[in-house]
Length: 345
Ligand SMILES: O=C(O)CCc1c2[nH]c(c1CC(=O)O)Cc1[nH]c(c(CC(=O)O)c1CCC(=O)O)Cc1[nH]c(c(CC(=O)O)c1CCC(=O)O)Cc1[nH]c(c(CCC(=O)O)c1CC(=O)O)C2
Image 1 (cartoon, rainbow, N blue to C red):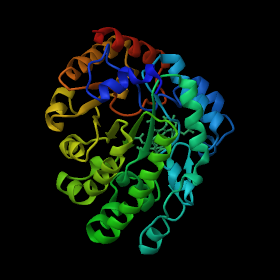
Image 2 (image 1 turned 90 degrees about the vertical axis):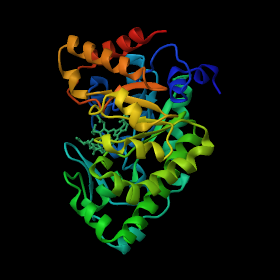
Image 3 (image 1 turned 180 degrees about the horizontal axis):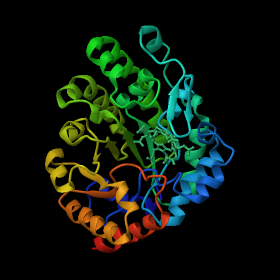
Image 4 (image 1 turned 135 degrees about the horizontal axis):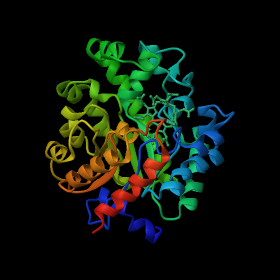
């Protein structure tokens, strides 16, 4: 391993080891908020871009060059592995992923075959190139969580209340678990491809799982997320588990087995540390909308996040969810420097 990588503040914080400063990266740090991203993406549809290694490498590198963040996040999307196994879906600008034939029965579930590394050669190629280009800055690989993927497949697109998803979960639990099991198998394979190609950490984005109550999380989701983190343990890379609106689920998400639990902006990190319990690092949790306010507001709030983060056994500074497309990149540059400065030990 690159010696710089072994000593990276990001990997050390994930492992709950002492750090020279609190490491920083931002969900969606690569993407629409950057003018250089918008230029590179011109004329390329999102899913085509995700399957073009040169483009993926360039976009992933952009925020690393611009901000000096402590980790890169692989540029892709949560629906890429589903597309790769033949699900008819597209990403519609301004909407999100849209599935041509939503899944509602056994036949639909049965069509979700396992993902083989040969289905995604462009992922292996892009990760391998990135690891070289990053030269010691860790690369985070990622996948969507099974609940979030299930919701897209069942609803056919983004959904406010996940009605059909919950109708299947409560009404046809056997079918639900079969669907979740297949998605878990696909997710595991997709994460393994990225780790084998050299990703230094893996994040599971179960962005929508905050829609379920704790007892339902335990019954309908935890068996599957638990399998993901257990089966990834042999890779010896930090595993991060993130969701939005998960204040009541933090303890269970910790139980699922990740090393790091991502927290959105709704729960202060000192409180989150109590909820998650011992033996975990935390990641988060500045409200991304704060970045739309004047710098002095950002500064005051960011200092608060760093301060509360000291209570956690390890802290990776991040936003509570992705960078909003209208964010001024100048704010993110200042924020990266500020966190490094105020947390320097
Ligand atoms: O508004 C739109 O045009 C569709 C956006 C959308 C996409 N996937 C989607 C959504 C729904 C949503 O996020 O609300 C669906 C999507 N993609 C993703 C998530 C997980 C999450 O954000 O909580 C979700 C589900 C979250 C949700 O639907 O609320 C994850 C994602 N997309 C992406 C990345 C890669 C990256 O940022 O490096 C990542 C993961 C890493 C990260 O957060 O940093 C990239 C991505 N996907 C997408 C876009 C926009 C399309 C474009 O530039 O042409 C972009 C780039 C950007 O965000 O600026 C498409």
